[in-house]
Length: 141
Image 1 (cartoon, rainbow, N blue to C red):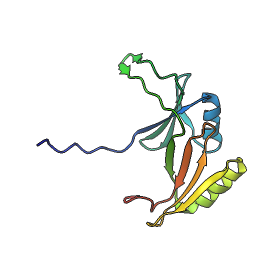
Image 2: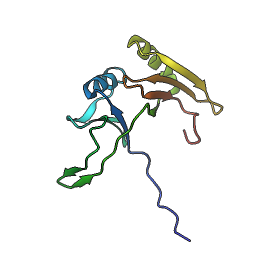
Image 3: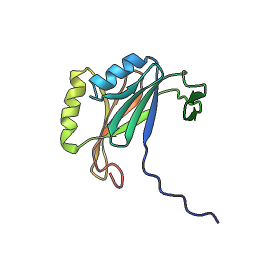
Image 4: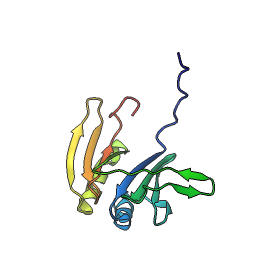
């Protein structure tokens, strides 16, 4: 019998793979109001909240090991429309919907969850499904 796994501290990074890094960066900056904390030709990193990073990588450009002064980063990539949910305050959801409309971003779906949360779904320029979710979606959120 093995020992229990040590506790995880949360999801630190979420990665999306995009066809045009500059276009994706503009979308996340202009529509979602995120500010990059790091950007180069390989990636753009946004701090979404404390200890919560969104990383954008050019699709197909992360298939080789990256050697850095402190070690290596193994290859990774993703294909097809991926999904990311962003937590938002219940009282800000209407403002978010207005902001999406002002940027001509179509809302594709809306769900009222049994625990009381609400989710609004839309797409980024690469077709990734993004969600704005209020508390009441999951136990603990």
